Length: 249
Ligand SMILES: [Zn+2]
Image (cartoon, rainbow, N blue to C red; front, side, top):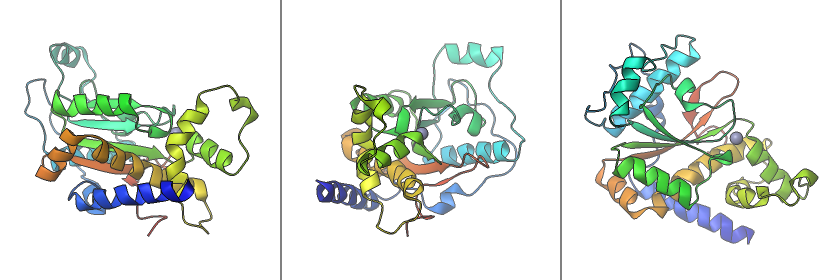
């Protein structure tokens, strides 16, 4: 079972790698300092994947530097987007109370289509939500965002190590952990901080699941009009960085 999970993750990783532009190169995460772009009104054209990524990372840079502008949060913006929404990016994030996408990317109303679930896992409801945002609302960037010290990832690692929390008996937490388990199992032997490595792998796994699980989204990625990226959030300094490349070569 463990080997099958590993193989599944690896196979999808290969598929992912084959789809050019699915996982962002580290360069795509380069901070874009400077002023925020003008607010994208509800009738504004959709941003390209690259422009959407730049806007996200510029917002994160402002947040990290304690120079957040809290854009698009006033009554005028509320009235504008009340008529229709065209978010420029989709963020699949953990439900963790410390990882609020609109705050950590310094965005406002109508900017981000946010899907949140503990462990930023992908099931049918999550995937359908992402598909809706891309196909019907015009978002051209999807970011699967894990985070440092994720409780859901740690709970999964503990359970796989034979130490599940007794408080989780008779809950659905096991079903959630089953979706995170492939990433935990994929951590190479000998890695000191297993949970931290699994956080990155879990975000990458989510991006791979989105790519593999949706034919329309996969088609857009292969055509170059959509990017699906995996990232991780640092709870300590607020920085968002690529989900791969730090712990796993
Ligand atoms: Zn979490």
